[in-house]
Image (cartoon, rainbow, N blue to C red; front, side):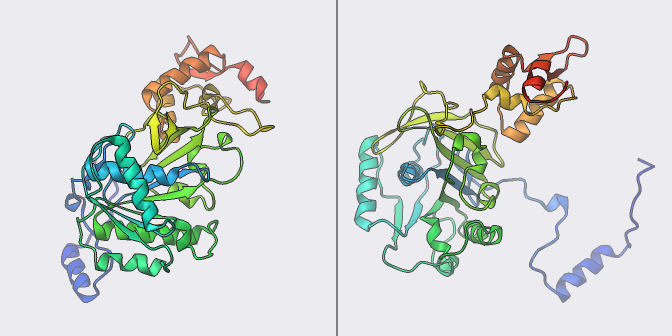
Amino acid sequence: MNNVLQMEIPPDFKERLEKAKEAAPRKFEITGFNQLPKIKPPVVIEGLLRQQEILLMGGQAKRWKSWARLDLLYCVSNGMPWFGFQTVQARVLHADLELHAATLRERLELISASYGQGSCDNIDLISARGQTFTCGDLDMLHEYIDQNLYGIFSLDPIYRLLAGKNENDAGVITDLLNRFLVLGFDLKAAIALLQHFAKGDQSQKDSQDRFSGSGVWGRFPDTLMTFTDLETENAFSVETTLRDFQPIDPFAIRWEFPRFRIDAELDPEKLRQSKGGRPKLSSAQRLAGLLHADESINYSDLFRRASSLCQMKKSTFDRRLREAKTQKLIYLSPLNNEYALTSEYLKYNGTNP
C-alpha cells in the first residue's frame, strides 16, 4: 500500500465543498460511499422487476401482447404469480390511449374469469381514447397521483407519445424513456411498456435486438421480455434480459384465450424462421461463437463470458457446452484442461486453425 499514488487533498476540502453547495445549489448531489443506500427499491415481481424500474415487453404485431400486459396487471393487483413469477400485491394504474373503455373492462373480466380467483378492485384506469395525450401530460401525472399509491404504471400504445417523431432516432427514444423513468421515481412505481418487433426473421437476432427502431429500446429498460414466435402455431419463446436480477432460462408459452399459459412440452429455442432465410444458429454454435479462433479458456472464464454476454444461467451453459462438445465444435484439451474451438468448427466457418 505504500506504493499507491495519492492526489493531494486540501485539509479544508470538506468545508470548502459545503460552502460551494450553499453558494450554488446543484441538481445532483455528490455523496460518499458510506452515504449510499444499502436497500434497493421494493420488488414488484420476484426475479424480474422492482419499483422505479422499467419493464419493456416486445413481440410481433397482433400477437396478444396487450393481453399479456393486462394479465400482468391483474396478477400484481391480486398478488398472484404471473408466468410462475411471484408478484407482490399492489394497486396498479393503466393508461390506455387506444382501446374503448368498455373493451378494457371486457378484457379484464375475461382474464379474471379465466383465473377463477381475484378481482379487478385494485386496478385503476385512464381511458384516453379520443383524447390527446402527450409527453406533457405524462410529465404532469405525478402532480395529482400520490407517491406509493401504485406498484406499477403502464401505458399503451407508446407510439402515440412519439407524435410522428422517428422511433429510429436515439435521442428521441432516450428522451421518451427518460420521461418514464422520472415518472417511476416520482410515483415510486415500476413502469410497464410495450414495443413491437422490427420486420424480418427474428430467429437470426439476439432478443434485445428484435425491437423496431433505435437500439435504445433494447438498452435503456431494466427488464426486457420478448415474445418470439415458435415453430408451433400460437406458441412463443419468452426470453428475458435483466439488469439487476439473476439470468432466467427461456421458457415457452402458448396462447389459450384470453391469456398465455406456460407449456413445458415446447422447446423455447425452436424459433420460427422465415422461408428462404439463413439457417438459424444452434445453441451450441452460439456458445462456440463466444470463443476466438486462437484462444483456449478454462471452464470458469467461459461461463463468466456466457453469463455476461448472453445472460446464461449455469444449467443452460452446462447443457450447451455438452452439445458443443458432442457436435465437435469445442473440445477440452487434456494438456491444460481448457476449452478451444475444434479444427472442424474453424474449417466450417472459414477460419484457418
